[in-house]
Image (cartoon, rainbow, N blue to C red; front, side, top):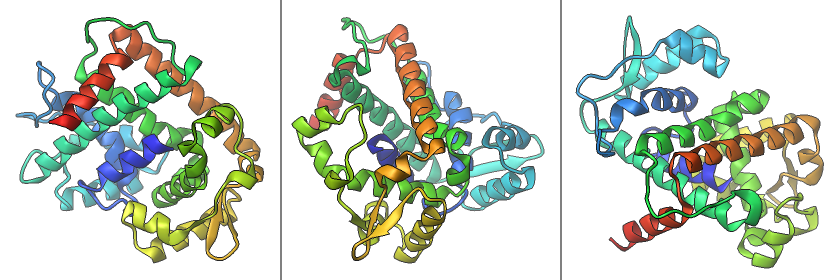
Length: 289
């Protein structure tokens, strides 16, 4: 949840996260990422962006072609994408190129941080530390965006509404913030659901502030989550993703599938030269700079 929350925060430099076009942008970024990475690993706009087909984007997201075409046209009007008869690509003109490059850089660093967290969690990520960093920058970004996108495949009933998915993540993350901050509790519930008694209901205003969303937008999204029975209001303006909600069969199967998918992505990175120890050093050096 923290990984996805960080991604949403980084995404706001490109487009308002309350916009439904967010999912189309994420897939476009994944398909175009290789064009934005130079041979030496720097993130910079390509001289000639290669378009990807709109029908392919629609099929990947499981959305109607006309919906995706409309979303890509909005991204074009916002300066985020270029669209022609061949398909769509990330924009390479104006200030938006800097925003897109910054977003891809943030995705890269968030993935490095995710790997160090998994490596700290005992058997979550088997590690054989090496002395040479060999994994290409583009591989890290592509696998990170694959993980960002996987909820759209696992929980389409929820995440076809892009903003509701963000609000769901915000509620679920804030509910267990205290548990995550405690080394004892986080280790105790690493493989088990946190009991409701330890989950703290979160006001929607907190979620709205965290993601920079209008309160009314968050409120409407929360009502949809309630109807879908994946979150519920409790107490005064407090919202909870309760144990009963997590035990619904679809969320349960989605969590298991997600966990396995993330593990496969990181094992592939390990085979390509990813080293969590070196990743931690890179992040610390960048923070110091």
